[in-house]
Image (tube, rainbow, N blue to C red; front, side):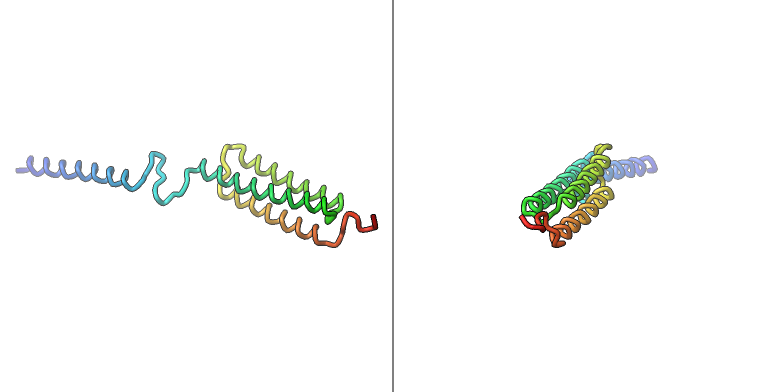
Amino acid sequence: MKSKLNKTLIALLTFGTVGLAASGAQAGWDHHGYGPGHAFHPYKQSQLFGQQINARQDRQMERIQAGMRQGELTRFEFRRLMQEQHEIRAMEHHFASDGLIDAREFQRLDRALDIASRNIKLEKHDRQDRYAYGR
């Protein structure tokens, strides 16, 4: 009787384990441990972070160059804003040197770009024009 009970218990445990494994596979778990609760693989997320940072920085560079063309920035302001952009680019390269930009690094870059954007706006609207003394 005990032998039959043990065999039944082992069979139930085996089927239960197989059932859990199958339900995990159906739920979308991949071999990296990322399931439905995780939107992206870390490399994919890092790539998206990089694309967002690059797009924002490109827009800021266009704003700086437009300000220079329109005479809204002095040469000194232009150089200082461009230096700020180069520093942000260097920070991005430093963060990406390990192959990934994680969420904390992305937040730091995003904050630096927020500050740079505010600086561009302030310099373009500070009533110091490149050709302020006639031309």
